[in-house]
Amino acid sequence: MTQAGVTSSRYWQPWATPKRPLLIRDARVLTLSGGGRPRRGGAMRELSVLPHGDVLIAGGLIQAVGAGVSSSDAEVIDAAGRVLMPGFVDAHTHACWSGGATHRLDEWEFKLQGTPYLDILARGGGIMASVRTVRAASRADLTSELLDRLTLLLRNGTTTVEVKSGYGLSTDSELKMLGAITDAARAFRGTIVPTALLGHATDDAAPGGREGFIDETIRHTLPQVTAHYPGLAIDAYCERGAWTLEECERLLTAAQLNGHPVRVHADQFSSLGMVDLAIARNALSVDHLEATPSHDLARLAASRTMGVLLPACGLHLDGRYANGRALIDAGGAVCVASNLNPGSAPCYSMAMVLALAVRGCGLTAAEAITASTINPAVLLGFGDRGTIEAGKRADLLLLRHRDERALAFCLGDQPIELVICGGQVVPEPPPMAAVPGRE
Image (cartoon, rainbow, N blue to C red; front, top):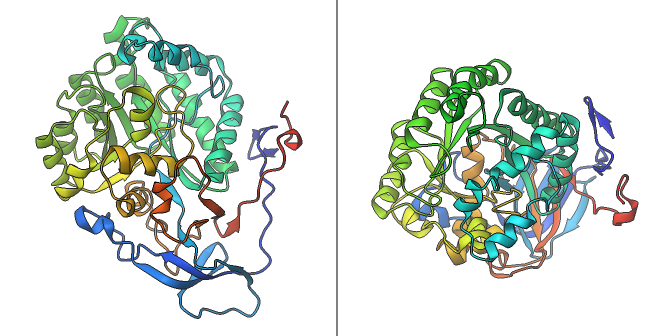
């Protein structure tokens, strides 16, 4: 297909403009209504359920929610008591990469044999493996691969997704990634939020070595991002083998001086002081938190900065999970996200992420639903989604289940019966052989 200068022979998206309103009747509606602020602490368990509700959709928006809603010309879907909930909002992914879904299988085998991830990173694997393939790829190729992944995410219920750069590690390659993400956003039926992950790995082979690379990123790459993408969130990964606390502070300071909000990856393997710095900088979020001590979790909970849990890493890497229970019990605002990437979290299913958040991070099923809908919507700056209320964007999921707890209880099934994105039903894909460009 060709749209807005984007060419993708593999992306299948036969959307049709709905001719009539859509009425979903007799659903167990998880409205999550009650204000546009993030849910904190015990409020994360409040789903504001309508046990037998109707939802009318027209023009891409929710028009009415309640019992006995009617429309003379609407197409009717009988939910028969099944759960209707907001579409998933995935607030942390690295979905833009090149080399296919399996180009880092070798390092996965090393990990299975006991090699620590930081050792793999030090050998030139991990993030650097993806850097090499991204640098070699064209902007059009990156866009095409990203659109394929977005198709899978959407079919699994993710209607809004954040996508980071960070596999470029040079001005030209980071701008190429951000350009591909922007191109994909114009072709995608759902919503993409780009983030510039400028502080990811470090390229010690760059002119001037590590210090030269850090200076180039802050003094040249960041201003170029500001010029092309003003106000875009800037992200940094503080970890041994990645950016130090002092280097992150320099980047975040420069970013905020140039009008960018900031987010951080912190405490994935080591607690290095980034949580305190993020709070002091009023960062939008601190993501990972697997190694965060309890006193830092308490400080984070008392701040305006959200905590983003990434439990697919715990499943795929080392069995460690962030203590989401402590963060919520201390009154914190929590999100859960897939962290989709080719190395540490090859996960396209937010339903699986919810199941892992309940088992590994200590969340209840209701808290996990809140953490994957309204809270990440607020984090990404959207007041028009994450709840089921009149006037909101019609991004909705109809589950196969009549009890929302089954969403996190069942493992390996497809819990979603129907995805509605922007008021339109997402069609089932054709057989693989019928998708243009597939071999």
